[in-house]
Length: 99
Ligand SMILES: [Zn+2]
Ligand SMILES: [Zn+2]
Ligand SMILES: [Zn+2]
Image 1 (cartoon, protein in one colour):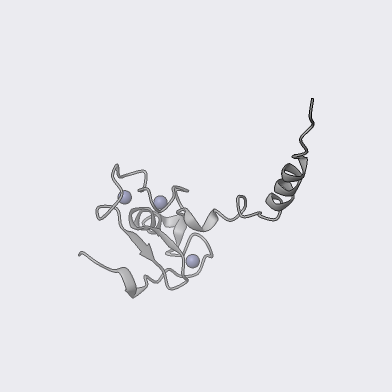
Image 2 (image 1 turned 90 degrees about the vertical axis):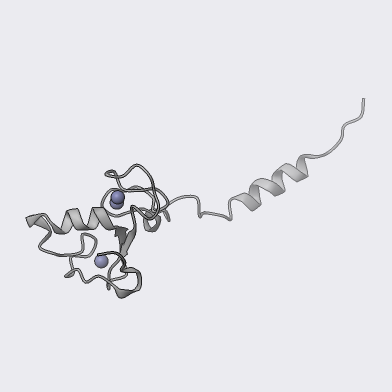
């Protein structure tokens, strides 16, 4: 019976894997801060992502589903502020479309 030494490979692999930590903690920016649904999806009000559920950018650089933001801005509690940083909400000009 021969013993083939291949443990070295396994050890090298798990050591390399520990160097990567971008699996956790960095997902906050890819989700809507209001409904917590990823931007590639749509807000809870809509069923299909895409043109019918656009995103809206603020001057503060935060991004939300337009429907989520408009709903939020419509509530008295919002005081017309960004829900993420509580600065007065100003819609950025880059992605304004429709009426
Ligand atoms: Zn949303
Ligand atoms: Zn929507
Ligand atoms: Zn903001």
